[in-house]
Structures are given as structure tokens and as C-alpha cells.
Length: 357
Image 1: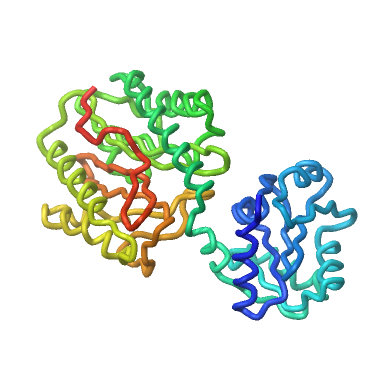
Image 2 (image 1 turned 120 degrees about the vertical axis):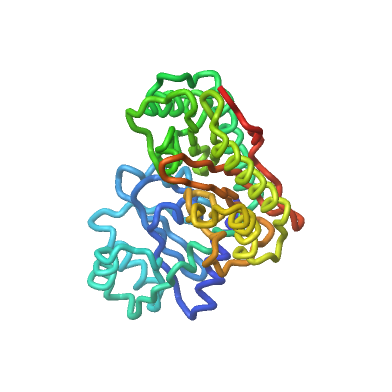
């Protein structure tokens, strides 16, 4: 494929007065180079780029590397090969990803003497992934559709007396059966009073009649993640839980309806938060409204009370208000959307009607 992504990175280098950059975080080597192996470094100059791997990945790197990137197997050490390329191509002022482990920064500093200056780019490299291209949007849509299919089948499987871990195992089996690589994060399956735990992963807890069950999960499809949440009930829920469900559903639907390109992310969060607060549950909604989703399950933009992001066309993110009441239970409803032509297009198709099994 034509590597417009690499040109975005080169533009960033030019803006920061850099000769080149080393990219080694796996999400970024997937994005900029197309390489899915677990160990590599991508060296990018103004005119050339090199994907440096060890023997295990040479064939894979040559097959996967995008147009304009030369795959190279290092013979002695990775840093030795990097250092020679830096010297030969006069890449003296070199940028690196800001989330690099300190030990890796030390290795760069000590083992790349031909780089006269190392510049921390913070999260600027990651932010280049914030606007999704057409290929990414298609992959994300397919990942969400796989999640919808898993949810639909799970509704036929879940019964009182099951353990949360049984549901988790069946869920992962279905993901792979339907064509996903696997889960995009450890699935959250929290029942009964445990549903008040925002990130309550599956335990041996037994699902009982009257329980709320929060199902928050996603899949990986062609390197891209999905994320969805639905809250279902095993038998008729109590009056307060049913009320909470209605509030969360209203908050989610109105937040979706309010989304527009050019909107401040903090204002999108406020739409849902105000509804929940006015209903008396403001302190029980303790997380942001959403987050970006892509190669990683949590990316930019951040849709929260602290966010400084402006929502733009091409951004893909979750919309997931929730209410969590200790001793009672919790409810969360989550969809994934892309902004297109100024408005959200919802990838998620699963019903938000109250489901009682």
C-alpha cells in the first residue's frame, strides 16, 4: 500500500527539526510499517525507512513491510545496525516515542553514539493514529460486528447457576470461532453486586435470578480492536436497577445524538454526565464517557471531564456511560462510533432494550 502514514510521520519530524526517528512500540510499527511481529525497530529518515528485525522475523518483515520500507535482518545487535544506518544517512538529530521504557532510552543513549541528539516526542507519534483511514474504519467495523455476533449468541447460552468464568470461556471460544484473533482485553463479566465494579473481570461467582450482568468485551480483527458493553438481567430486576438502566440508556442515547465534529470532547461527556447527575447518581458515574479505539483498545481521543481533545471526522471512540452503586449493582451501555460528515456513525448494532433472560 502507498504509505501516507509514513509521510505523516515525516511531516512531524520536519515540524520538530529532526533528521529521523526510531519507532519501536508495537502499535506504531503495525501502523507505520505494517509489521505485526513482536520485536522490531523502524528507523525513518526524510527519504528512506528501514524495518530492522532479527532472524525469526526476516521473512515476515519482507512480506509485510509497506511500500518504501526496507526490511533488514541485523546480524550482531539491533543497536549496532541502527547506529550504522544513523551514521550512513546522517540522522544526527533523532526522535523517539515518549512512552519508551527508560531502559530502552538508556540503550539508545549509550549504544547510538552516532545520534548526536535524542529528542522525546512525547505522545506526538501516537497521536498520528487518531484519525482513521478508510481501511482502518472497515477493520474496526468488522471487529464490532464480530462482537455483536458474540453477544447475540451469548444470550442463548447464559443461564442462572452458571459461573462468570464459564461465560468468559464460551465468549472467547465464540470470538475465535467467528473469525477474531481473540479478545482485545480481559473480558469484564460482573454479576449481582459485583456489577458495581466497573472493571470486574470474571470470577467463580454464580449468576443468580435478579442479577444484573455487565458484559464488557471486544475482539481483535486484522490487528484492530472492538469494545462494547451491554448489561442484561437474569430474571426481573429490582425497581432501582430498572430505574438505573433507564437513566444510563437515556444518557447514552442523548450523548450519541449530541455528537458533532468540532465539538469539545469534554462537552460530549457533559451531555451524559448532566443527565446522570440530575437523576441523583452523579457520584456513581466515576469514569469518562469514552476513549479512542484502534490498534490499541485505549487510544486518543479521550472523552472525559479532563479531556482537551476536539472531536473530528475520522475519529473512532466509545460512548459508555455507567452508574455503579455499591451493594446494589451497576449498569453500563457502550457503543463504538466513527465521526463522518460531521455526525457519528454507530458501528454497534446490538439492542439497548432491557434484556431479561
